View (spheres, rainbow, N blue to C red):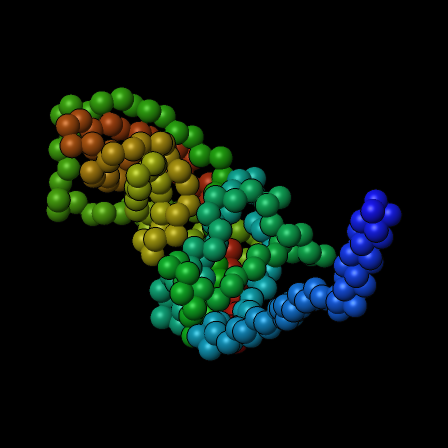
Amino acid sequence: MTKKVNAAILIGFALVSVAIAEESPRSSASPTASPTPNTTPSPSPTPSPNVNASPARGVRISFVPPPLEGTISLGVYDTNGKLVRVLVQEAEPDEFTVGPDALIAKWDGKNNNEQDLPAGKYHARGYLVGRLKVEDKGHAADFSPDSSAPDHVQVKLVSNPLAKDARPVVDLAVGFDEEKIFLKTMDDLPLFTVIEAPQLVHASITKSGEKSVDVWASNGTMVDQVRVSNIDKMMAFDCGEIELK
């Protein structure tokens, strides 16, 4: 009896094994590959040329400085004699490029407002200002500006032996900004800083001698007097005609 039971159990296990062996295995589905993104960068747009951009312009200005120790102020003038650009203001000679036989400055063709000027003929000229003497005279309580007085003085300068001219006469005026007060020509070329004087409201100039001037500076409440001597120690020079293309 026991042998029959064991035989039946073995037959049952065999049938189960055959059924499992005959069953088809299930294959696992392979994951679908994601499309590879396009990593090629898009080309940057080509910038359009600026049709309003000014071409590179430059004018070389050369000159022989007068034989006097001091600083140089140089301006560019149009055909009407109007100052269109203060090119150099109170510069030492060693600030210029030194050529074989002259000092060299470069003009970019712009005016004082950094605007391009039209092509054409221009003129460059300037002054070499010697070592002037500045003396602070203090407050001038009894001075009141005369509105009818001239706004400039005439000064006869030292002649430039390189120019072979008679002693030139220059009309000097006084100007000021937020930081200083300075001597200038009547066409507004700055020549010489007199003193640092912020917050001025008025300035004037008078002749105090053949070789000196007095500068009067007011801040609205008081007036200071400054004397500038050796004022004739200036030499004018001319760079000639230049052409802007």
